[in-house]
Image 1: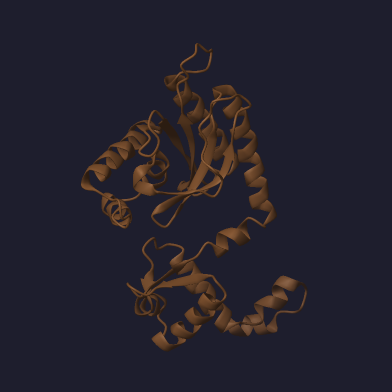
Image 2 (image 1 turned 90 degrees about the horizontal axis):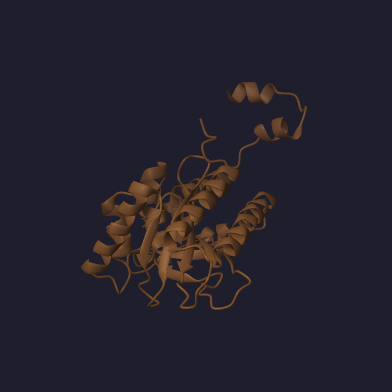
Length: 269
């Protein structure tokens, strides 16, 4: 293959670039791609073994990636994991901005229909991270601020984001929270079973009394969970024509399907 590439004429930028290799860059990208698949992080020896590289060359690459803010080291466990740097960069990329715009439009319509706040979250380690949030125009709402982080084990969003994982992996992630308890995990697993069975999760908020969280998963191109869509449902004491919680679940499910479809769910072969 090397000989064929060397004989290729410079007919375009892609072919020109294929003539050259950048081993250091390749190693750095290999590390980022490997860590992107790990929820717990990896030790440098584990990274070296997975990539069939020496520990010394992996260590040098990790030092550079750490200094640039792409990876972080947990000194207690000696494990390296990704920071949110890649996430921040991805949100400067036009296709991601388009995705946010698509989801935002559907979220806004859903918030108005339900007269409830709606937010979208992704997994960030053992927490959920709120990446989009919309309020309805009415009064008396409960919302979660943009950028908020909440332990996965206490949220219906977390149940939607992790329902494709094994119970063992969920337990590993949840146990990292200092407020973790067997009872909390049992409730969390019950929420996960709801998602597996019905595609939607309804559970009382573990943080705010009187709020029932309703959440659905957003499915991406490859059939894997990309995000969660959640309504912190509040029941108003005055008589209104607002949808009840059963209707809320159906409306949120449809919103989740619309967003999933627009980001390519089911398109992967």
